[in-house]
Length: 403
Image (cartoon, rainbow, N blue to C red):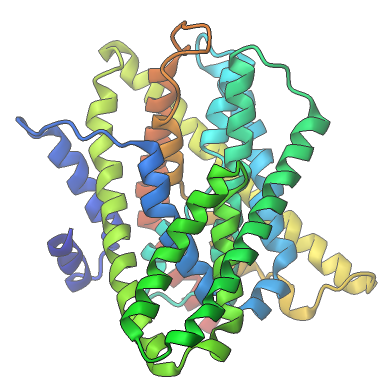
């Protein structure tokens, strides 16, 4: 991973793409042992540090300015995407029932801003675009996981009741916010060990993992708890930590995030050959076509919703009936880049692989292999297709802006 990242940087090539291709190639190599991803370990190892780092570094003021767009992408768009994918899968994939279609939709509903930020690093991306993409990634995983939970329960025969689902969603978010806020108060205890940098940094490194585990143990959103933790600590860090300590911690976090990001993309590539083995050879091409069509549909839904949000913000500002400010408006360039940055990644992969093998009555989970295959294929299509073209799109829009 380190070697390929160095090669990618040398030739100015998006390193996530190179790592994914390398992972696929390694997976097809003979005598390579199968590497199984435990979804719970993926969520614990990858989500807390990545979410905490993004939340800690995002500007709270900027986050508040763009909260309308962020919430639209992270909540409304997630559920719209779930519905859109479900409709396509229901009428396209043989044997796909409505509950199974909604499972597939929920798996692929959340975008992976880690991939987008990794690919666009070094490009001329505006601060506003970065803030919106990072803000979206801080919340959308929680929305997707709630949709996934209800969809899987429906496959097992449970009925879906809208008000109960809505109430549970609110409770998950509220509980996560409470846990994250309470855990962030612990940093004031570090005032008593201000002269021990190693103790403070070690405490800060472990805090996101402990917060995530505690929230999940209490059956609230660990994602939201970690995000709240990061935002809260960022807000009060100047009062608690001296600058030299913050710089030391920053260097350590940069290394951890770099290693995790690289590992994510190799793992995504590694999974494809093993998933491929579970699909009959004569069905591979049709299922790849299904995945390609779903990829196009998700991109269209995202683009449509982003440009609708752009129009809504303009209208809201002109009517002067809301708190929308001029800084929150989306121009055409920003809207297009945000639309094209809707790549899927490790969260979708972990959710897919985490599908139960059996239902509660002991019967095999219907179309499990097919759902996993389509999910992995969509992840690869978005990362390779949009990932390879996103740098070109950014440069093209930048050159047109200069003209």
